[in-house]
Length: 183
Image (cartoon, rainbow, N blue to C red; front, side, top):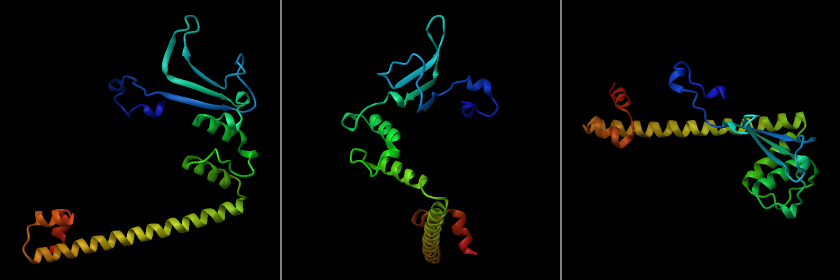
């Protein structure tokens, strides 16, 4: 919430907050007086005496994993699938078919990464760094080659007395970049 506050001029802001949510996964316990048939508790700030909502921009969502007892055949919503995946991740020998899709790809890849030994994780991180470094080198080389081609085209157009405005339009170079080529 504090990150939403602008620097200085707090009067202009008028404490106009966007909604903030706390989502807590309760693994080994349930909230007091919580019905066993419900596993998501949506809590808000309310006046204790009137029951009227005091502030609707701060919400607390508690997910009671003990109360989430669905079986794989009962996973109808994406939320059900996610909660099942969180609850049973350590029990999977292999990835279940019903937990497929790109979002679950990332989830299971993160789980594999978290399960690596320190040495394996270091090796994996080094290989990623090598891959990213190579990509950055290639991207830089392509950008430099593209810039060089634009500059060569601009020099040819300057030799033909083409206007700087037209050269800028044709090459995408700025006026300053074209002027610098004249020198």
